[in-house]
Image (tube, rainbow, N blue to C red; front, side, top):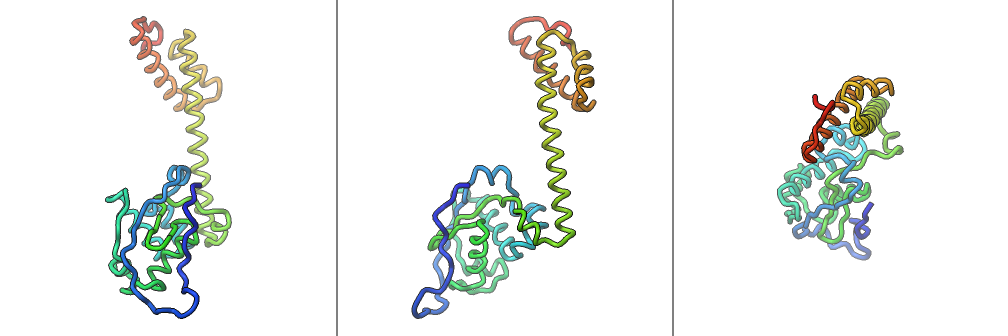
Length: 224
């Protein structure tokens, strides 16, 4: 994953602590990542509510949701008043370096969901799936639900791959002269499920007919 500069930890500086001095505006930017952005989950999704919430905590989840909304409206980034943001999230009115809001941002950084450097906070637009260790910390019922969700996603991927292969086979059969009825029958013999075989044959027939029309040649037996 594309990593920004290591986030600055929100801790007291060495020496005397000047106290809870208020911070200036916080600049929020998206933290892009090609893999996570494609496979991850929106902070407002059911996945995050069910599985990230008990790992990350409610304050951090609500923060990520709020920042996602802000970035929806201003994708290039925005500047937020930390005191107003804290109040909006129910984190009090403090906006010092050790306030609940800053600790919440720091927690998101520790989980790799945000990165902070001075007044700049880069935040993930999508959250990755839980790691195996994080899943192990869920309650048994949530672990079971997470496994069922993973199994369902795997089934969908397998089915999508089968459908793609069936389409390629159907198109090849039509191109070598088979008609749609024979093409679908071949797919049945090759043990593709009836709905996949039917859908693939229809897709290939439409594709083959369109190519024939574009080339100005008759479609022959491929006509529906």
